[in-house]
Length: 125
Image (tube, rainbow, N blue to C red; front, side):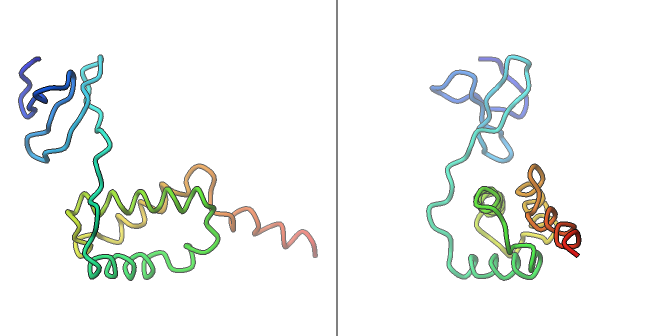
């Protein structure tokens, strides 16, 4: 395997590299770019940190959490889990901007259901 500055090749897997600063695993693509591999989530978070995250999400997103589609809830859960992984299970360091970003990722493709029903109620009148 090639020696690449900032990257350490995996000892047994071809085209898998470990980033020296973050320790995360990446696959080297044919183009030469690196794609982050899904990381194994932390099995169990500290209940206090989960409570902090729940309060932050509720205060940041408020009523936007109501009416999310099942798929959007799953995407939001995954994004929030990724944030907890990125912050080593410490919800204290997660910012409101990161929570809003996770929400936007969850709702960007098909939107929040209330976006579609806003004008529908007005047309009845």
